[in-house]
Length: 305
Image (cartoon, rainbow, N blue to C red):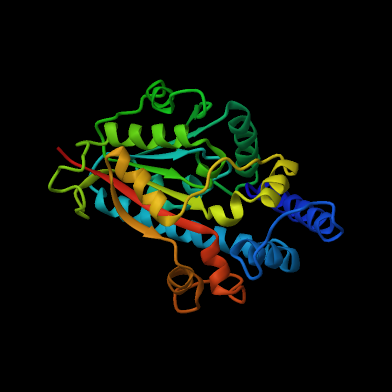
């Protein structure tokens, strides 16, 4: 399936963490840890439960993003609109969400040329087996860290004047702060009116935003710790950035956008997406506080002129 490589990565990451924990316990790595810290809880749970906890946070993130995409599609069901998957990787939304297959919705997938080549090959195999139908996405190869992803989109016929939803899932943690800031600013500049702190609507949660970006961020307490950085380097996925809830909101505001939603509290994540009442079908036995330690999810938007 399209998720096979992600599963392999998660398994490899868990193995690397277990190896590093063994080094730590035998004195091979020195690190100051506060007993009962977020970081300590995070590592302990992953070490004892395999990748269960991490996958649970990813499931919650996916359910949250699907909900936001559906809201955008409902808002624009009679309009031409764009959905951009920035750093799309093996994202399966264009193949499993019926709303994205509508004729009035243009879907663009942006990622490195090599990644997109591998994905196209996987998609073709699934089509041959009759698992998925026609491809609705336009692939826009781009090195997000060094190229303008907007220019890459325009090269593929992207219409900046249309309402647009940017999905930025599982990407910010692998980028430097300047790249994250420039990405948010690009959305703010392309999406309509750019606000500043003197604007009367600056803190308003107006539903009239015509451009959105939804992204996730990691908790810096554990994600930027020495031990975790080493684990991710060994897994060949080095982490570059992580933010507190307040820092994530400041990033959005400084770019000139409104924070429409910011979920960083584990209990809310659990109640909304991981319980039986919420339709959750996942590893609900993982402690609620652990889900919250992942970081948070932000939906930001810009006002129409």
